[in-house]
Length: 325
Image 1 (cartoon, one colour):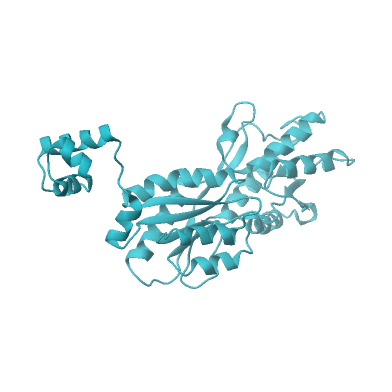
Image 2 (cartoon, one colour):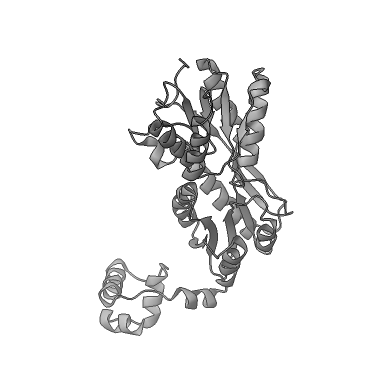
């Protein structure tokens, strides 16, 4: 700051005011200071600022690198946090680095509130660790008192998917389960309920799987080895659906002529013309905005009861569903 003040020909105090965007400097002086700072490559020391003001104004976000939908939510978290004057610090789950370790790193960097994009529905220890600071769990209901949750209306999304397939004339509708993936248990329960509502209880079949391409390929290989194919499949998510499409088409099965496929998430790959996947859209932007707003409100308004926010789900019909032959 002393170097910037010297180059701009002003006091260090004035430089501090300009760089903190506080009143006290004219437009010409402000421009001169900012130009000098840019020429010198000056960047404020965020750690020093945090110590000076006693706050980090940073939201810690836990994500899983293997979940593309997490990336979509994180992309929307940045502008949502910025509008409220907060920075974002990411910590990822990776091989050898579980959710407990990743959350601990965020707390170690003095994040004031946490947004946990959890993958494991049984990671209650992570949630309790996060409960020591204002915390929002994304992807499932929270189980710790005082922790907020933001998730999609899973039952509504699955119900729309099954209704769409039944309206097309399908009865033999299989579901590939998402294992421990976010929302999987709710989607599995909703699939069974939707099939029963259409009086198709005898047609219910859940294939164990996961929320990735390998699970879709494995399910497709299993189905190809059977005497009769189902006419439609509701996959765990888009990645699983894409793996299933690959396996079936490699085995000479036409999609959607022989088998219709529905995914879940509406990720970027689903829009590509050679995929063009019918899927249930999750509102990544809405989820991010609610999660950030809840975290900041809990941080700035003191003690609040745990709140649950349910975001809408919407079926997007594309080219992977059609009436059965």
